[in-house]
Image (cartoon, rainbow, N blue to C red; front, side, top):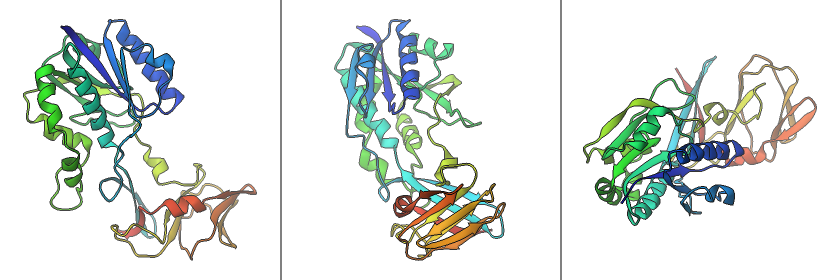
Length: 319
């Protein structure tokens, strides 16, 4: 039997991500590893040709609210203090989907060990050492590129022998993942995909890689989650009049304009124009929207579609 199949989980939707993927493949190939690459989006043939196996799964099974969502919030200090909340789709199951696809194909092949890594893992010496000398079940601590603390367990590096992988795959259950998904409600269990992964690996004797594993690409940018202006010169955030019926809200559509660093900004609501004051946060109740946007440097930017799409966002007073 061959030794260790490297299974790379990926979603490389930019040139930067593809370049990181290629670089990591090249590093793995210096040690003659066989590679199985998975993606939910097309991968250039030039990349497919430098790995042994490639799975393209167009389904990309993102889970949307209210089945499951990723809740983010931000506090804006001022007079009054405000709490902004938004719910993003849950991408966690897409990782489990790739683990299932890659794991099942791997088990049909002639390998002893199966190492699951993210495409953007920092391929430092300790990671390469773990891949060259695999153990029956190795997990990892992960620190995001934009974070100062680590998470455990993570998806960045996990190594399983054939016996453990064969026992693990049937335990991964989408309905179980979805039904225990709401940490702000009782009862609940899994706050995110890594929490569910931690639940699964408790069924196995495992060791943890001694060093914290780091990634090269930030999964999210929380600053942009709460700013629809497209610029750092000022920020704006909506609560529209069609908030999803599972989310508690006042029923009043609003716009918050904050961190204003310029003095030539106008808010456009239908046919009304409002001058926005520099260095002042403004929370404005909105009428029925036909058109909304802003004028900056005599250029109009329309935000009507973004406003209509913002059905998972709320703005509330807080202490």
